[in-house]
Image 1 (tube, helix red, strand yellow):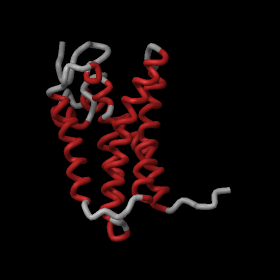
Image 2 (cartoon, one colour):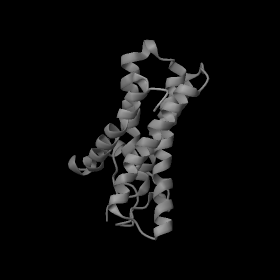
Image 3 (cartoon, rainbow, N blue to C red):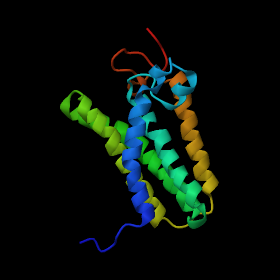
Image 4 (tube, rainbow, N blue to C red):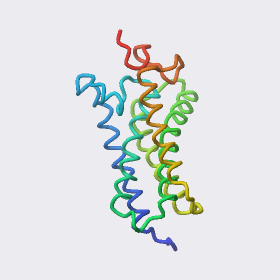
Length: 183
């Protein structure tokens, strides 16, 4: 039996996992559905590269944490919440390519079902890490630093969509192209 029942805040963060998965899955198609709209390119994958797929957890994670903050800011420690948000974001974004390259390196190829499950698993890792950081970190008085890093992550995501380095992480495995390039 669990001696420590989950708080409403912890339950909310865990409910973020299916939300992030669902919104992330929808984001996968946004760029094509909008006729390759430049604004859609900023928040959704523009090709089948591993890098572009990390966008699928980026916006939904920050939205989920921001939504709760907006509604409950009086009851939260602002600094810990912002650092928790940053931890959730970096854990989710970082775990996706790490797990992809780990499993494809071991198996020698990728499988669509596993690729899809990586989105859910990345969301779960991010939410769990973020909740832990919020719950267990010492109160920091520098929430703007966390917010600035979150903004920088989004800026890098957008920049590399239009100016991707010529590295395997950024290469579309199906077409061999990078970013918004078209054959």
